[in-house]
Image (cartoon, rainbow, N blue to C red; front, side):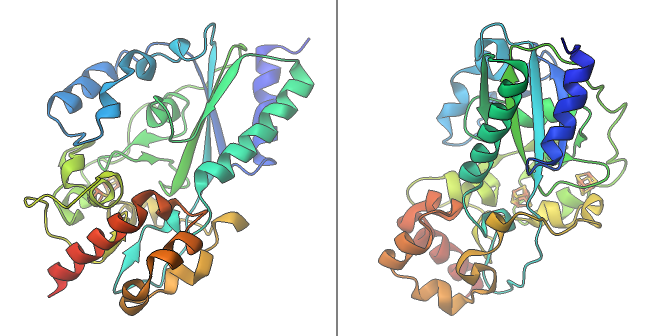
Length: 308
Ligand code: SF4
Ligand code: SF4
C-alpha cells in the first residue's frame, strides 16, 4: 500500500502530465487565519452585490463541511498568460479563449479518474472558481506562493497569471509547508496603478470599485457613483501587469485558451459592431458570456463615455 508521501509524490508527477503547471497539498482544516479577514471584508460591504459571499461561510472556511471526512486539499495552478495586442478596448487575457471552468473541470475529471484507478474510490469534490472555496488561501497554505497586495496568489517562479483549482478529498497525503514570508516587500505598484483605487489596503480589494466586479459580476446598470475608468470592457489586468513578479510570465501551452475569434485584436469598432446575435454565437463557450449582452453594452457605454 502506498504511503501518504508516495501518494503525494505520485500525484505531483501526474498533474504536470495532466495539463496543470503546479500542485501543492495541504491538510484539510478550519482556515482560522482567514476568518477575521473574510468577516471584515463582508462587514465593510466590499463584496458589493455578491450576496452569495455572505452564505456558506462555514463551508468557505472549513473544507470538511464540503466533503465529510476530508483529509487533504490539493491545489492546482494553470497558466493563462498570453500577450495582448489590445489598445483601445481591452478584455482580461484570461477570457480570450474557451471558458476556463469547462476546460479545467474536464482536466480535473480525468485526473480524478486516474487517481481512483490507482488508489481505489474516494470521496472528493473539485472546484474551479465556482463554489465556497478560498482557493488562494489553500494555494498559500500549500506553499505555492503568497497572497500579494493585489490579493492575487503569486508564485515566486511564475507570477500570478494562473487559474487556481482545488480538489478536496478524504485521502491522507503528505503536506507542503507554506512559504516563510511574502515577497511584496515595500513594493506597492499594484496599489498605485489600480485605475479605480480599488485596493483599499494591502490584500484588500473593494469589489465595488474593482473593474473586474463592475464589468462582470455587477448586474443591471452601472451605479451613478461607479468610478470612472476606460478601455476595460470585460475584467482588468492592470494589477497583474504591473507586478514585477510577472516580468518573466511565459506564454501558456493550453490550446483551449488561445483567443477565440481573434478577440485579442478587436478594435473599438469591432466591439461596437457586435450584435446580440453575434454575441450569443461568438461567446457561447467563452467566459465573456457571463456578462451577458446587456452587461457588455453597459460596459461599453461606461468606458466610451469616459473616453469622450
Ligand atoms: S483588477 Fe483592476 S480595478 Fe481591480 S484591483 Fe486590480 S487593477 Fe484595480
Ligand atoms: S505589484 Fe508589488 S505589491 Fe503588488 S502584488 Fe506585485 S509585488 Fe506585491
